[in-house]
Every structure is written in C-alpha cells, then in structure tokens.
Image 1 (cartoon, helix red, strand yellow):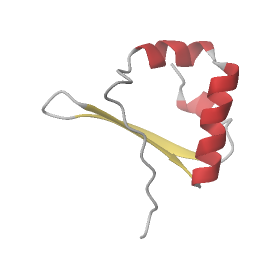
Image 2 (image 1 turned 90 degrees about the vertical axis):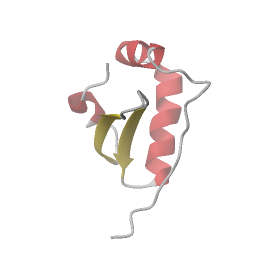
Image 3 (image 1 turned 90 degrees about the horizontal axis):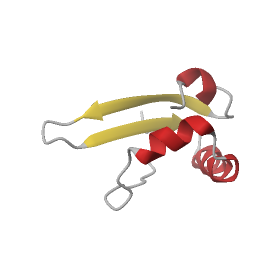
Length: 74
C-alpha cells in the first residue's frame, strides 16, 4: 500500500485519513494543495502503476467509489 512516506514524494501532497463508518462504508480522504496537483497525482498513478497501489486498488469497489473535490474555506 502507498504509505505516507511514499506519498510525500508527490508534489502538493498534504495528508490523508481513512475512516470506517458504522454502516460499513469506508472513506479515504486524501488532501493535496490544489485540484491540479491531485489530478497530476492520479495521472501519474495510472502511468506508473506502483506495486503498492495495486494491492490498495484491489480493495476498492470502483462501482460504488466516488471521487470528489472540495475546497477548504477556513
């Protein structure tokens, strides 16, 4: 899995949090300094396909996954 140490190599990476809700749903919140750097990160993952991401990606049900972008206001 991509660890924070590896994630720090990506320009604009801030941090991430993983939550499990009472109903069994998971939320993985990954923060970057801008939508542009997050998009560049996702493009790079598609291009490189690091070994650690393959294991992580295999745990995701992409039919129910959502990708959302939020802007921090405070």
